[in-house]
Image (cartoon, rainbow, N blue to C red; front, side):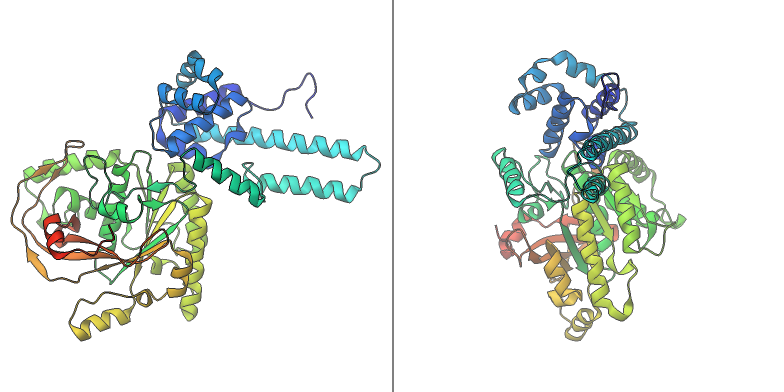
Length: 488
């Protein structure tokens, strides 16, 4: 309990530096909010500023002095919004967002100290009361300390249903959602910022705190789709930060796929001198390198932490969330996670359940790639027809139906077609050339098998350029002619 000459542990300077870093960088916002909540700030006005920054970030709005002042006024804190000089001082209190995590940890430690002092003070007061039971006092203090450790000081272990509904209803009235959406931007974000066909079908994109599963036969473009979706999601909305755990080919495999997709060179370009491109394409590759370095994508191949168990993936996901602010985790692929082969269904079902927990605990969307089972491939070979898969072909029907928000399959229900050579297209936002060399392409579909948030059993058509491991939008004129199977 504080005395007149002792102040509760806090640092106004560090609080300002954390808030200043959040105003400077979306990455800092994601990192800080993953670690601490408003309770970590001792000064009440700092809690309100933190809350306003978080609101702007969740809406995908820019965090600057003007928008922050407007948001504070909207929350009823006109006195803070009117003190523009104070907000400017906070913004100028830090020169870089780099130390944001370190400073946030310092605030968390001081918060824990304040909470422990409060618990000790209540325990001391109770101990002076002769009518109380000592066991009950100690049990109450132990529970309070457990709550701090279990929730990282950010909330309560148990809330009443009424409080939960009231909080969700208040967010609804403010025009906010309890789940944030992360647009995939796949296969390439629209220049006008509008949603792609896949994002429209998903209701805006991938929802945080949810698991999504995409399956295909081996060698049918899962990793290519994962890599492409990593950078299109990072492009589609500012604030999306992608983590890619690659358990199959390692980080070098991802490098070759990304370069092939964007620079239109051979995916073996880094592996074989025979595939060295000409000077024009090397110049394009240099552009692509500069562009990819600016995208917030963290790659983790767990090369020093194999075999990959569910527990290790939990640890790596937490590291990606705290250190890199990741809110979209791509995991390639399920069968590489260690499991008991004697009880395939049961043990991989446990893994699926654990991945949903990761999504909920770290407030991220988890996108998992998976092989379709061997029986599906055998049916395709027997019939000679490109059959559409069923849920049973995933081999985890019960687990996916219970836990996954949406399940997709990559399939090829159409024959290959020859596309004519077209002119080079250039994206004005990043200057990366998108060249079409007239390669033979395949018509493929991303078939929806289950969708928790809306209609299911729909498909989105794409073109698959195998030589560059690239997915492209299927021409609308052909979709109209074929009456593509879309629910909108």
